[in-house]
Length: 330
Image (cartoon, rainbow, N blue to C red; front, side):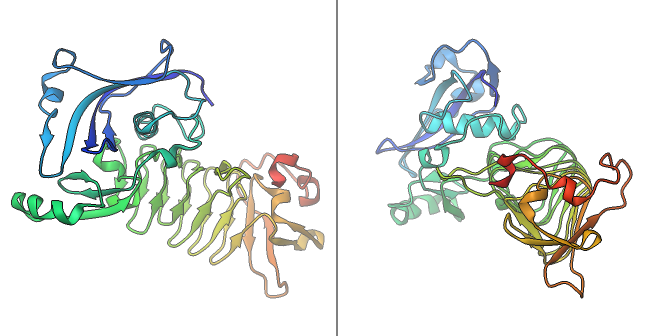
């Protein structure tokens, strides 16, 4: 986790009751010169002409658009307000920091439930009153009623393909060459470190390596710790998670395969036919060159070595590989 700070100028949508609906930061920056985390409003002299034109009172939405300057002293510390939270999400989606490099503890609770529309964010409680006013501008579409907005409404990273905008949240980190197909989903503080194909779900806290494919209806889900936060979960490079397969709380190394309809959890019994031995999935969490599959002679899921080049673990057995650090056992 990095300890540097960040600064950015943005436009915030603030409801008439003072609720911060969102904050858009077009050009966030990392900085080591921030002495205190804060957000303050800016005057006309502090803004570019482009930003100044966005400082308005939208009476139809009952929202004031204001210019703000947000500073974060230390990204390893929790966010202090909604502006701080939105800046952290922008840093991730702008690829300025990678997942798990900043503190997202309590971030979700700082964000308010918002009606996300094509006319801008609104408070959901009085939305039917607003709808009449907004219809004057044309047909109004409500995309979602949620705390988290779509990434593409705030950040459009270069070199990616997203088939369905609603399926990628602000705060996702998508490396160039990544494709998120129609049934794929990427949450905040998760994403890809290289070209990948995503047709399944990545929960918050999940990071996958380059050239990995997550199949249709597959799920990669990071487990929660005792405080309710997601534990980091990683999937290495060149892995293949087949249709309706997945892992919950078990990391994978490079060149791993999970066959169709197999779900791996830490306490999942795993048979190792080559050793006539049964282990639990957590014992080999994070290992390279694993192939999880069904065998007609075994009631449990089986695992074997994949025939991939670059297997740096040589002829080591799964019995030897099961001696892993205690932190992977959680």
